[in-house]
Amino acid sequence: MEIIDGKALAKKVRENLKNEVEKLREEGIIPKFAVILVGSDPASLTYVKSKNNACKELGIEYEEALLDENITMKELLSIIDSLNERKDISGILLQSPIPKHLDIQEAFRRISPEKDVDGFNPYNVGRLCLNQDTFVSCTPHRYNENV
Image 1 (cartoon, rainbow, N blue to C red):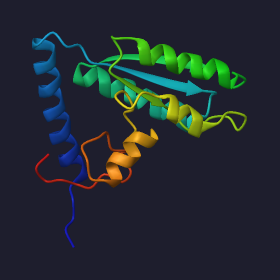
Image 2 (image 1 turned 45 degrees about the horizontal axis):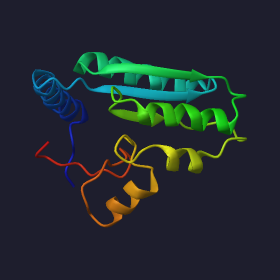
Image 3 (image 1 turned 180 degrees about the vertical axis):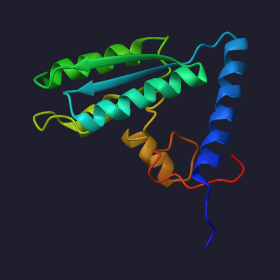
Image 4 (image 1 turned 30 degrees about the horizontal axis):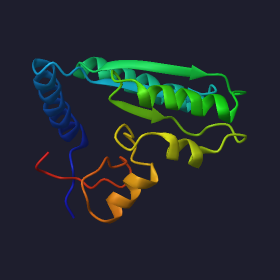
C-alpha cells in the first residue's frame, strides 16, 4: 500500500494552480469563484472560509452569496441563474447541506455544467461516468501523481 504525503501533495497542487491562474491572468482571463451558502451551518461556514482563503492564495477572485435559511426555492434558483449568466463568474459552488425545504437536486441541475465546480450537475455526472473530461467532485477524484 502506498502512503501519500497529503501536505506535500496539496502544496504541489496549489503551486501548479497558482501558476495556471497567473497564465490565465496574463491572457486577460480573470478567474472568479462564486459560493452560495444558505443558512449558517458552522461546518459550512468554516468550509466556505477555507475556499475564500484558498482563492486569495491562488489569485482567484471570490464572491459569496450568504443567504438566509428561509429563502424560497424560487429565490435560490434566481440567484443561481444570475450567477450562470454573469460573464465574470468562472465557477459556482452550492455549499451543502441546504435547508430541508429546498430541493438540492433541482439546485444542482440549475447550475450551468460549465460553471459547476463540484461536478454535481447531472450532465457532469454523466460525463464522469463515461470517463469524459468534466469537473470532478473532490470526493471521488483519484490521486494522480502527475499533478
